[in-house]
Amino acid sequence: MLRSVWRWPFLFVTALILLICQAEPCQAKEISIELVWSYGQAGWVEIHVEQGSYQLILEKKTLDFPKGSTLQVGWGGWGPILRINHNDYQILSGTGIEIKGIKPGSLQVRMPMGKAAAYRGDLLMDWQKGHWQLINRLDSEDYLKGVVPIEMSNEWSKGGLEGLKAQAVAARTYLIKHTQNGETITDSPDIDQAYAGVNVEGEASAAVESTRGMILVDAQSKQPIEALYSSHSGGYTEDAKNVWGNSDRHNVARPDKFSDGVGGAADRWHFIISAPLLGSTFDLGPIEKIRLDKFPSGRVKNVLLEDGFGNSLTIPGRKFVQKFYPFGQEIRANAFLGSLFEVYTVATSQRAYEYMGLTSFLRTLGDRGYEERIGSIHKDSGPLLSKVASTYLGVRADPQPYGVLIFEGRGWGHGVGMSQWGAYHMAQLGYTYQEILNFYYSHVLIQKAEG
Image (cartoon, rainbow, N blue to C red; front, side, top):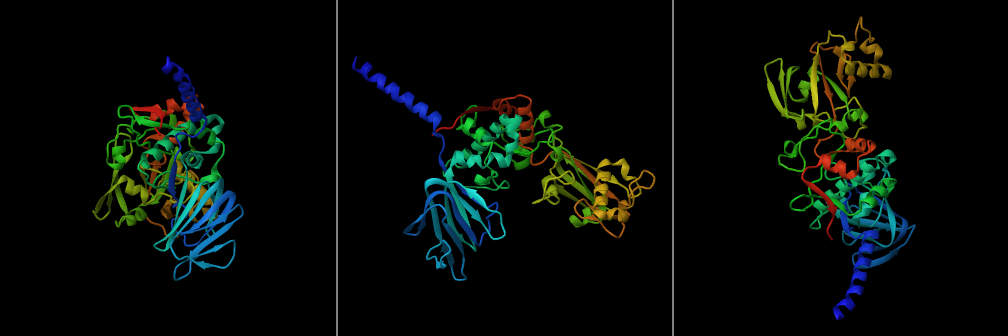
């Protein structure tokens, strides 16, 4: 009976803990994010306390750093320097600075001529090899609130909330997979996954909260998977082995009807380049022949180029795309966005109206004042294709007789794992986030993260 007497208080406490874990972030943990996307080469940085209260830690010295406080750090020619609340500059005897949160708030970070961004949690700064390394240390769930809306969009919550939930689970899984042993990841979409802090937080936060702690694990080992994703699959996801060389049973190639016909420029795009310019890009003469070696998904494995002098070169598909990918530019239909494409050669004597992508491109140039240089766009006369350089470079004054090449493509990104546009479309059609994740990832379970 004594054991029975103690059993009820124990069950009560256990139930209370479970209720607390449902209401509080029991699966959340503190993580470290290196801010390289905008601050990778920061020589001068200003930090301003927007909300909350902090401490400024300089080696063994700790100062109060309340709301409204400002810190400027730079380089004085002989060592790192700092200025607190616009007082005189001081020489920093060491190289490290920490701004530690006491009451929850946000820190605004900016560089000269750069946009300001705000971050929750703590900020660590260290002078390394001519620039300041910035580390944002914060709660993992707060981090995800700055990931989901920049990887997708807050606007997608209207009719697409389940897609945002799928993104939250995938992003959380990626985070846990890559920080299991205390590793630091970056805020860069080119290295890890995009993270933009407090500024982008909005409606997507509901997707993070409603899936709190949920991740994708392998159905057998129960370990977090490599939850990869890209903007738009182009109608067919890619096998991880064809992109990174390693097989992954969770990320395999399959038809993706949900990414068909959605996504605007990401769904269908085209890129145009003259035969001489394409050849010179790869140290060849004007290109006469081009052949595409493809994976089963339709993505290009290799591009074989041959010029008019008998020279040839084989380039891996991804490296070929990188030569023309619009890094740092706005995504539009006249761009080279991925390796799922076809190519057509057009002689300069042919009519552009036969090739809608080329007609659209030339009409765009005409809108910019180039019409008198390329000729009018009519069935009877056709434009002066000989003067086209490329989609990005427009036209040139001197004509060339070798023709142009039109690349007609689909999708945006590597195509492995979940298609973000496809997930959004599935949500609009009424699918749950669990169904979305099970469509894009194989051999997985969706469950709470441990610890």
